[in-house]
Amino acid sequence: MRGTIITIAALLVGIYWGANNLLAQQAATKPAPAGVSISKILEEQQKKTKTTDSQVSMSKLVWLGAHNSPMNKGDKWRYYQQTGTLKQQWAAGARAFKVPIHWFNPGLTITGKIVGEAEKVVGEVKKEVKKVAKEVASGAKKVASAVEGLFKKSKKKSKTVKKSSPSRTSRTSSSSRQSIPSLCHEPDGSSNCKLTLWTRKDNADPRPAVNFFRELKQLLAANPNEIVILLPESFLHKRSEANGAVGKNALIALQQVIKGSGLGGLVYNLDKKYRNEDWPSREELLKQGKRVIILVDGPSPYNDVSFYKETQFDLNKSNNCEMRRGGRIGKNFFLMNHFREISLISGSTLHKAFQVGAKVGSPISGLVAKQWPSLAKNLKKASFTNYKSLNSKANLKRRYCMCKKQEGIAPNILLLDFVEQGDGAAFANEVNTKVLAGQDPCA
Image (cartoon, rainbow, N blue to C red):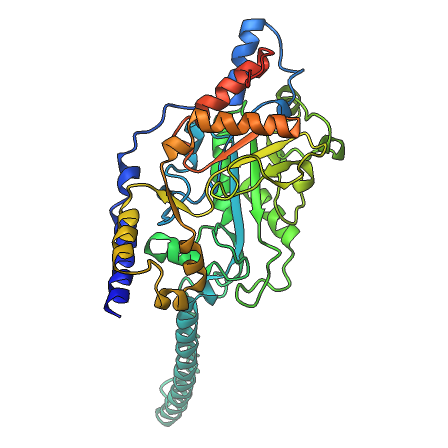
């Protein structure tokens, strides 16, 4: 029992330090040099060759992608897949962004329910107070009328007592209790972001998804020649009593998020022919004023998974070119997932806490497993990773060339954790430069 308590304490202390004192290695990491986007490379190529990019299909190039882009240190996450904010990921060269979206209802969390019950009690008290006040006011009128009649000093009727306006409610008012598409990270889409609340600093509520896309809209406005690929991982079809989304339409909800952010008019919907044919060029998209391509993993009002193939998620299990979907068939866009399923940075404070816990017993105690079964299941699979090594040119090139040979087409998106660490941007730039020059990046 003593060992269990020490283990739990070590875990919780490590998590606390990781949240409030910053992860040691992350804090020491210097910002990566600014990445070079596809647009910049194409513009440089045009200057050199004095040609346009009208013949260069967007599906012939490589995009640096940020896996779980919103789950970053700057946006109050304890456990995160990116150090930098969206703006910093952009500066590092990322132009593709994976975005998990779940339903979240703050009024249905434990805290929300407690506050909601308190509000009900306050509401009942207010009703009683108003009732008593009304009776008192009525009695006062009768007394005033009697005095007025007795002394005949005035023939005016007593003024009615104005009803007081209802007070403003707390953040869990009826409007804020609505289920909204939010940025959550967990395996159970119907849980009301239960694990997310635990893994966010100060147990803060997850951000509304529309806020993230508004930030992206601002970046696009400041960079009018850039084109981005969005990879929403939509769990909006996971409607439950727990998240209060029963009866809501997943497709309409995602559309409302995109339109509400201001991105709606920039979205380019791919024709069905592009499932097996080369995509349009950057120049074609810019002429149409279209600068956002959306590929949704989940129910989609935009382009869905039928437009691309992709590798498996977890490098711990699939370190070569094992395919998750679309392997060896004629799709012309290829997503290479290059990250571990559950991973933290080597040398971090949380890593050290796990090492302490391992000395006194299993890092996942029976108590933790009982209280947070989903958390316990995921922590058992956690690995600690040197991302400079994982995202090195050697690692990326090995998998890129292996997949190119196996699938007959080269990967188009290199989806990484911690895009600013390692050589992701440099390798993507090198590949694109060679492709535009007619050279084989794997030669």
